[in-house]
Length: 291
Image (tube, rainbow, N blue to C red; front, top):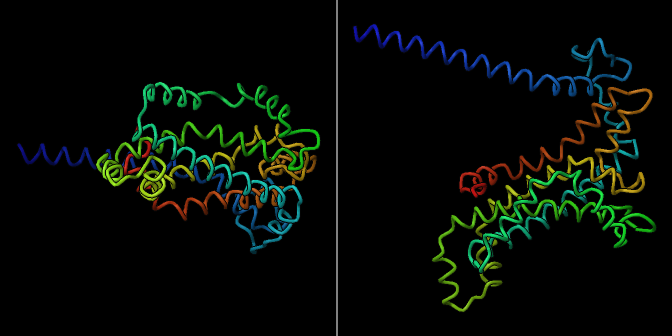
């Protein structure tokens, strides 16, 4: 009787496992379908690209679409602008988040929890809610519009730094909360102040948290469209997301060129994740995203 029950349970668990794998496989295929179309279409010759034949493999590999996409000023300039914006905003907001997280977890002051809660509140404010006051402030301070030399890129970088501070502070505060206090207490006994402890001990210890923060911020700034389209004032300062939108929004849509441009635009975020992925998982395992 016991053997029959065990056999029945095994058959049931096997059937459930097969069902779960089948459901997961369906989701994977649904997720990969657009990626397949992007890759296949971008590798076709321009005269081979058509909507009815979008599922077909290319008869021969062609990189003409990539050359055409990179030849577009809005894509080439957009890539350069997006790299500048994403790199500066991710590094600066991560450094500021690290200092905030260090102070809020290891050098606590009266009202630290209130300050931390107010900072976290910024995570839940949508871009649209702050768009008008932020553009007004940037215009009044001369960071966008008029004769501003960067075409609004400086305002865009500052907006991403400020908007990224809540999540970077949360990441680093959670990470430093898992670091034993005795390390910093020993540094105090040796005469190290707050800045020395942060610079010499806190920053080197937080490399996994930096990986999490930079991947998050870089991806967020790179994929942003709303702030970019509002704050940049001319086509030489557009980020790549606006260039992609303008190619796809033309009267005659060059599908192969658009797909190649989309593939090129996705490579930097993929590259950042490949480089920092090992530290990213370590940061998550260390509790970097714990409140």
